[in-house]
Image 1 (cartoon, rainbow, N blue to C red):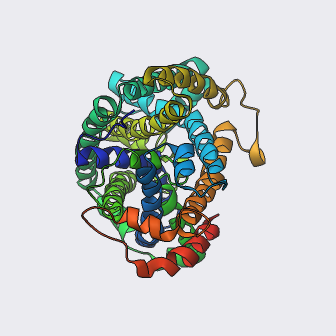
Image 2 (cartoon, one colour; image 1 turned 135 degrees about the horizontal axis):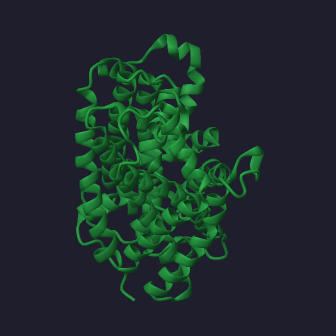
Length: 446
């Protein structure tokens, strides 16, 4: 069967960037930057993105493009006879399922907040207790949570069932362009608020007093972590899009474009959030609650806040949904490749699996709120811990070793694949860096 391709180069870049641009950029990046004192963290993040993020991204795309297959079969096609690299492909799929077991819930929260702002649940002049009460009510209501999670899951599989060009590429293009327009409008609005200057200074200018307070080592490791997780590397989420790519352009060139879009969205998210926080006297280091409690507080006090709140959560919905359809595509193409299913059958079967598998995360906030798993974490945090702290870094290390060691695919074959086409190329002189330094950096994160 002929493998589908993207209709346009722009389609590939937007879909791949859409996979990378998710809650990690627009939710995790600003609050981690806030906790690590802003300016210097942002600078280090950019450095590590170039040193680590882009090289590993080219490797995942190279495995996909050279094999034209999904995770397990991609390894099988490229590995040496009798070697066992393809076992990692099964862990990649486990990672994709696990990620979707909680990501659909968080994506559902974003959508429900968009709906709440649109229908007037948030009114101007609400107290901060009333605002945080909205989130508590949402979490304590299993039926409402299940409805939003189900909407995201069913819509995601519907889009994927239509194929690469008619479904994913078409929807992602519209969503990503809308996302970029929304983010510019929201950022301009935030920067024009009175007192926004303090927020910009906090975000973009390194504050060395704050650095010595937090500790440079902590800031370095947080920046390394974020540069790595932002691209969703290590669970074949990017590999699958490599398998649909043409050979017209080099992989380093495409990787730089994906990273640039991804980083642009993360940095702009900070430009939306920090000026607004400082303008309304809200502390920027609120951690994960920043988006559901802190920002709605800002919107209800803002002129035209209902519209801005609505636009902001529409942007958040697009950002999270773009990741959902990218990972669903990976899960589906795995089923199509491994079991010979039709696209519709793969969508239906996996849709049912994800709906059932997402229930523990939804119920973990209400019916099973006393359930604590890994190290006393709730269901969502436990699932996230396994994906973010184990499967992503270990998976990236496996892809790296597969591409640069003689026991795997081998450095020369990887470089040939990565440098095929027009555009930026990787120098072979970087071989020692790829073979010795990069694995150590990933182990340091782990």
